Image (cartoon, rainbow, N blue to C red):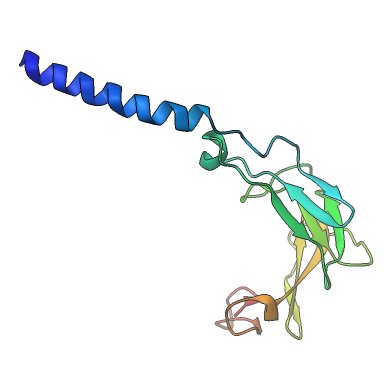
Amino acid sequence: MCSLSIRVRRALFLALAFCMPALGGCRVECDFEPHCEGNVVMDCHVGVDQLVGRGQPVIEPCLEPAPLCVESRTGKRDGAGGSIYCARSPLTPCDEPFPDSCEGTVLVSCLGGYVSAYDCTNDNRTGRCGRRTPEGPVQCL
């Protein structure tokens, strides 16, 4: 029994010896609050990767049909951790519930309290905007 516990301790020690430099040597690259730099979204999503030092900033240029970088009107982070969004021009406030709609291939929705738009042709799916079923949500198909 003692030899087994010594082996287990040795294995744990070796595992820690190899893991600690990897964890301690990493630097968290995302050390800023979400913000706009011109019309570019700069965000750091907090998650497991960031906690172990592998976080990468999310850098997203705001392009047509939503060229304006804006901070959420609600001040709250969304389910994905973001609080900075690309909004449609002219800047138009909106509140939930906002009826999502399609304008050709463009999905129009409310993000962070502003009307936003996403061109479904940028998606890896069919590039169409619509509903899968008559009662389903409007989405990129």
